[in-house]
Image 1 (cartoon, rainbow, N blue to C red):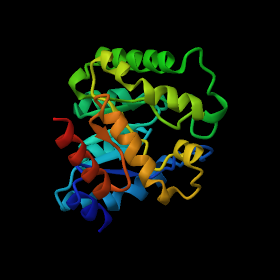
Image 2: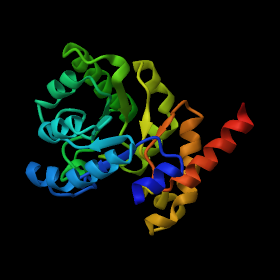
Image 3: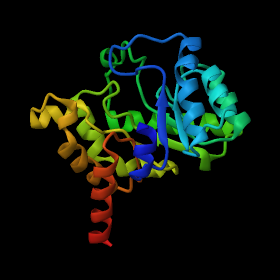
Image 4: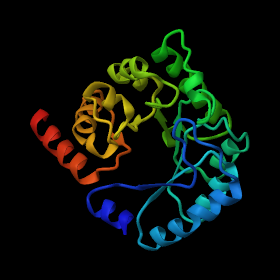
Length: 234
């Protein structure tokens, strides 16, 4: 029901995941992950709604892509499971490559950068080169700098201020900034569901830098803000 509601509100695809990747989260067994996402994938696919599958595991990717999933969203940037890049190459479906140092369990202890923007850029550029070596078409690669994943407040702001630099890699950019902690650092709003205003603001700043893919919770509100923004600036 939630997937249909979000789709009706204007979502282009629904992101499904069977493993939490929030800071400090424990790893989920692959078999359990598949069992968690399987019913949702089957029911949402039956509704003809496109699905993005959020997973770090090649077995889950293969199951999802065989079951009609449209996009794979890997927060590890295809580093967690070395078989993943081969699965993506086999199916030739879009892949979202995100930057995250380490794992969800320890990423906030690994946020040491010489220059966070350039270091994330180099990581993403190298992952694109790897994908191309395995025969993945560059047009199928989407890049996510990983706001909140192994970055502190100042590091997140540096990336958000410099999102346009990532276009030089030559792939579409996605951001996941909805309800993130950095909004709380600025607004002092501790309740995630009450961070819509900050989410809208950051989303429009990202749009102004050419970011056209947004992973959000509040679909209707973000769609409305984007429509008004685009109408005014065009």
